[in-house]
Amino acid sequence: MRRARQLRRLLYRASAWSHVRHLLALGRAVVAAGLRDDIANQAAVIAYYTLFSLFPLLLGILALLSPLLGAAHTREYLVARALGYFPGAEAFLEQTLADIVAARGRAGLLSALGLLFAGRGVFAAIAQGVGRAFPAAPSRSLLQQTLLAVVMTLGVVGLLLFSAGLTVGLRFLRGLALAQPWAGVGAIGIVLDAASALLPIFLTTLALFLLYRYIPPAAVPFRAAAISAGLTALLFEAAKWLFVWYAAVLGRFNLVYGSLGAVIGLLTWAYVAGLLLLLGAEVCAVLSAGAGPAADLTRPGQPDRWPPTRRPVR
Image 1 (tube, rainbow, N blue to C red):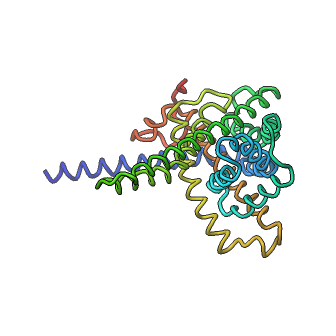
Image 2: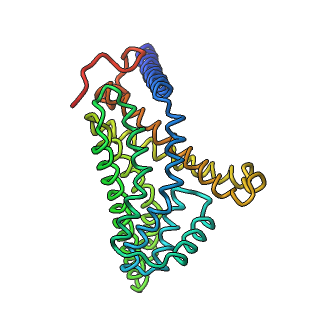
Image 3: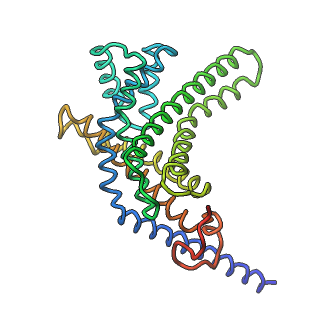
């Protein structure tokens, strides 16, 4: 009996070590692919285009949503949503948006579409960076790249509209629940508050999944895109909190760059976010090349290398 327990313990340790070796091999493959594709410089390109595309995109979305929510509520909503992706930039974004709106006035539908088209540059840079993680796939033409950037822009607008609808719906349900004098109202309020807090994370994961699943110029398995999106979303949330702490405690950009400190902080975060996004694309590409990520990551006894010698899943 004791020998059987010892044997099971040894087998468990061997299996656990096999999992660890396999994950380490996956990590080495991802790092090697990232160095090959020069994701550090690609992230700098994304940060550069983010600075030039951010405000045209925000103004275009502001013009589209203002008739539905009102200009003041829309600007407040956009700043709140943007803070989820650009932490620590609340005052800069709010003041800049207010100044631009005061200077140019309200934009019409055609002007809003023009602003959205002008803001497509960051999506073109993201699509190009993600596509580099799949070097064996055929490259896209300039027209295809432009159309893809436009589709990505419209997709982001659609996600924001979806988010706005869910936010309004959750607030309505919370108000309706609080108006009912019965014992379970407190629990419902807690559940709705938790749903409101988790909504940005859900939308980030959904956007990353769609990005890794459909933007690469190659067929990507569903599970590879899902694993990469979940991992990148977790890293993004952790990096966001670390960046807020860094900007408040160590990286006081205003002491070095003066009035440009907010812009430098925005660029720095855009670079970090772009690096994480491209790292997730490399994970997705490595998992796609290995085929069947869930099986390969959990099956003991696999060779200590990546990808395994198996045909890709289409």
